[in-house]
Image 1 (cartoon, rainbow, N blue to C red):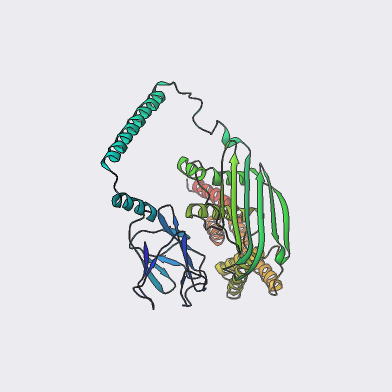
Image 2 (image 1 turned 90 degrees about the vertical axis):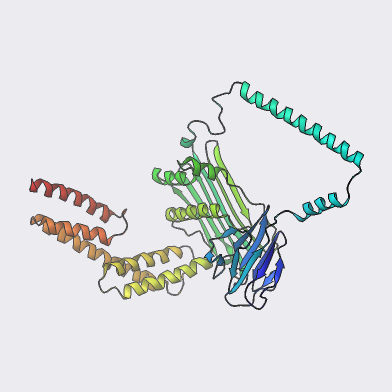
Length: 430
């Protein structure tokens, strides 16, 4: 397989793809060096897994395009695929995935033919082996058909395994010189769930962070974790239980690891990736798991540098929404949501200079928003007491429109009052 330049200063130049991988980026230690600004320092990696070549996006700034479509994390390649990295376009040439050693052996067999006698003996031996294999297969098939089956033993899962105690261990760590951040890092996150007990530890010595907490989960939270890792859908469950780890890749400069263990009764799986990008299916599972962990613990499972960057963006967005509120519900809600998210991102980190303004603005936005919701409740009570049911119904509908979160207590109360008022109005019409 070859990679052909379709654009840039090296147009029409071919590069041989050699296992295990080739790297592309601005840094000089890449296999393919692109000096353009649109290309990240370590932008992409094309590696061979078995007989398949795969392109991986190394969390670049502008992403990797495969046939004009941006890939999520990685994607398999076939002949004539077009790959765009930065401003440079490549094309994959060739469709023969057979290993070179196999080709050489086949050529040697042709170049160095055996004598007729040896060929006959070899053919006779092959025929004998084939006949023996056929007899063996027939015997095994007969045993499978004739021996009575034990209906109580149909695989590892036993009855009631879903009701057994849930166990989850999730470990994420990074240490060394991070090529994406261009700095040395050392951080570690560990989560342990057993039954309804959750423990997590976050350690980042270089930033002076150490968090060690324990929480008790309610039945609904345990059910959410169980549903995520042990779905009712048989195909999804089979996929999760059959997910495989990738062999660890040695890296002297940077160590990055993600490990997930989950079990209920005698059913479960362990997945581990060391210095390797996650496959798309595993990436989706880990992302959902981290999102729910964040909801439960209030802790963002990301590197401090990433959290600071996201917090700053959320702070500026929320501040702009609050300043342009003009008494408008959507802007107040957006300000409250973004500013609250920024506070959550900064939990456990050293507070930035803008933190006092962030907290003060969040308090002002929250009070202004809650006051508007309270005014609507007051109008509803007055209209209901005066028998103005139509206006009261409009008040309730407006409350529900102003609160996008269906789990919010104001939303659920408005929903209940709306149903009760609708029944009352129907009885009055009759």
